[in-house]
Image (cartoon, rainbow, N blue to C red; front, side, top):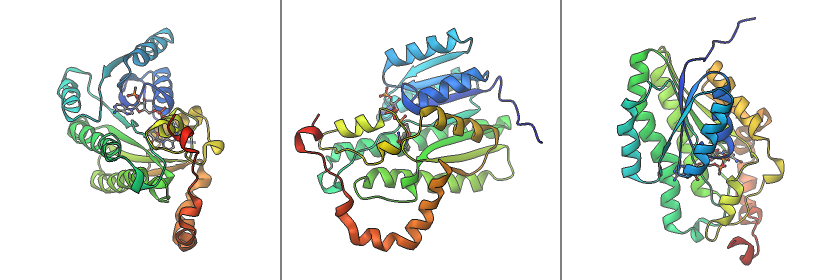
Length: 272
Ligand SMILES: NC(=O)c1ccc[n+]([C@@H]2O[C@H](COP(=O)([O-])OP(=O)(O)OC[C@H]3O[C@@H](n4cnc5c(N)ncnc54)[C@H](OP(=O)(O)O)[C@@H]3O)[C@@H](O)[C@H]2O)c1
């Protein structure tokens, strides 16, 4: 059996590291001897994760950044040369909103695109040349199964993850033959604050699928497996790879059901 390469001594930058999947990936990478750079808006969370990592004899630093804002992203990118060369970039920061696109506040749609798409493009563009130069690098994009199975109720979110899928595939092909890898993890539901965020957004409704959620530990294990055995994409849980076939063969049935599949919360709950 081939042994998997060690990632000890590498450096990883993880966006959205203050909670959920990003937090767990940071802890797990740090446990494997990777120096982690935590990026998110909530400084108190980042400080406590850094302390937790250091208690476990790992090494971490953080950078507070609102990835929605162009000037904040530029500040982060300008700071990168002062850090250790980054080997692994985990584009994880993101959020969702559930409801009719016609009801989605425009500012929220714009924010979603900035965080889920533009921040990924900006950081990947900033780090890929260095990775190529060092002869090692891995960009891991935290996508979703809805990227290949666009669903009513999550129009902009599905589109952001489809963008991520297409971008990953194209750059993966550009990097073939080099030691720089690009991957997308197409996740099913994961038990995190993601669902609360989506529900609490103005006019946002409850996203279905919460009951089927896997744990953050499970999602993080998949990220670590990708780092160790790079591949273009991975559905997690694996059973969700079936969604591509369902969309191809039965998309017309879903078209007919249309808004019947949209689950609404009573107005007062949606405005929590
Ligand atoms: N949970 C699921 O079911 C699921 C399924 C498929 C894919 N995903 C994807 O997994 C990723 C992580 O989500 P999660 O489930 O772990 O949710 P989460 O616990 O809500 O984490 C989201 C992370 O993104 C950060 N973030 C959000 N807006 C940001 C901004 N403007 N600037 C900087 N950071 C920002 C948050 O940090 P701050 O609030 O501190 O800034 C937080 O650390 C997302 O890309 C999501 O689309 C989740």
